[in-house]
Image 1 (spheres, rainbow, N blue to C red):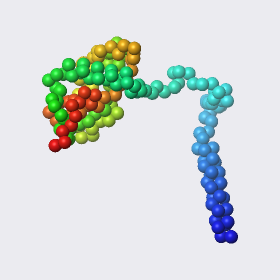
Image 2: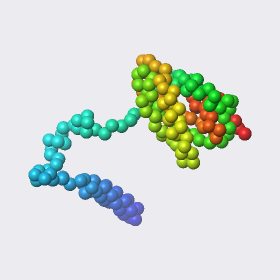
Image 3: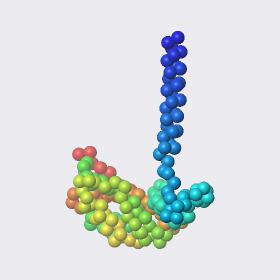
Image 4: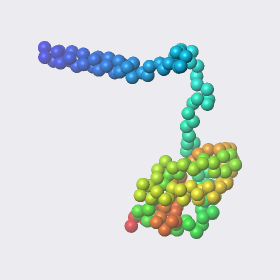
Amino acid sequence: MTRHLLSRTGRTLGIFAIALTLGACSILKPADEKKEDGKSATSPADEATPPSKSDVPTVRLITAQTPAVRAYRKTGARQIYKAYANRIYKGKIPPLVYAVVVVETDIDADGKVVNVTFSRVPSHAPEVPPMIAELIKAASPLPSPGKLGGHTYVDTWLWDKSGKFQLDSLTLGQRSR
């Protein structure tokens, strides 16, 4: 009898929790706003019409890192290595690098760098990301991406305290000591 009562109570509590959740959805829904002329700001017709392209917020999409994009990433890295041959850290990187920065580089169909953003920046080295952005922009245009066209590729910069660096796509690895 006790087991039957407990399972019934559990079922009742589950149904109650679902009802509360559904009720909260309707409570948290914003009320229709009124325009100055007294009409509702949103009408059923507005809700059925998809927003125009200008109403949709723009979101940067990183190109999927397909084999072709990864190959281009190495091509771009070689161009940067060529442009800054004296800044490349020779050999294996030390076990503790000064900064690791994940960089998203937007290029157009001709290889011109359009934008540089960061998805990981070191909080202890805020001076490094702007320097990396300047290096990439100064090395522009990168080689033409060919059939890939304009896209965003991601690479990781391994930055030494000396100001020398390696790119993850061309790194020689890291020393254990």
